Image 1: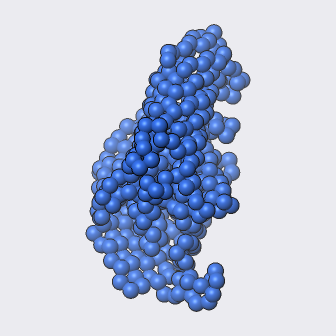
Image 2: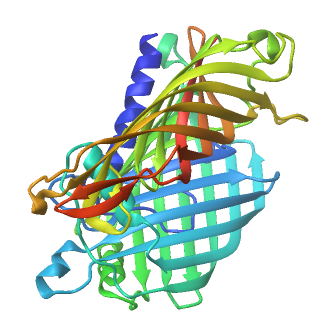
Length: 468
């Protein structure tokens, strides 16, 4: 039980890190680096400086989310969203924000394991766009959850989409396995070298080279080494140019994997783009239990994006519409959502949102060797309160609260990630949610009418803890 609680606490800390100050991240369009002895099917990566130096800096690559997944034995897809800011440029009355949205398709040309050596070479292509992709809503929504200062920074005029070409190469050599007994038995040591490079059709060029010492024992991997990054060709605007300059440096890297959880910190020597990464991984070696081992109850935690809200749900197994032997798993749930998402594109106004719902969920594992992945759908009904708030420049002014009955619809996929012991399992969750209030409402704020309770839909990124 303590193992489960610690694992969950670390995950929550990682998610909370998204709303703290940040300053750097991975090359947008490439998978996060990972020791070659680990080859997950699905990875969810968050980069921020909650494991970097921290402090008052909130510039450069202020937040980064990377989702990558295998779609066949040698193919994978990747999605990257990065928020870039340069608050100090406001001293010169310049716009100070831009987002990067990247998609990649890759193919692994070399995947060779011989004796103590592992060699992997992957290459691919994709796109990288710069512009306004809701980074302001994401950053300020997380800041509002932890009562941090919002960043009212205007977007630069950049709006571009470029093609990308890239490669990523890993080499690992195991050279020692320890003897001994107990905890210290079975540890192996080796070294790992990684080289990667990405070029865009607009002549942006990102490269990285790293060398690391690694020790592992199956459940744990620890690595320590140096990483050198190069950036060039970022002349479109002052924000991208400053971010590239800050990320062009040599850094010390320390990483730890514990089961499905990976934590890594990158500490630069000369610049200010130190950052941390938290990753959770899943693969087909963690199949979901069969119908004889359906979880008794579940605890679900997630973020609704880009209009940021926290989602918490508890579920208990039921058989209202399905039989005990059905391939479908049914649950009755109670769910709460809360947050203060930004009001449209106005960084001075926020909607304090509280919702409590009950409903039913149905879930089924995919067939043909994919039973570690399950699809789900859920229907709920509840009550939602909304209130308009002003930021610190408006002295915290607020409107009256308005409530409406609201229906919700959730659907998506879950990926088995780890067995946490004592009957607990952990899964990643990617999905979408929609909500439909019974009617819209209108409130007065500073003597002006504003409309609340608008229907909408959003992404859900989260995790599910199952107890058998």
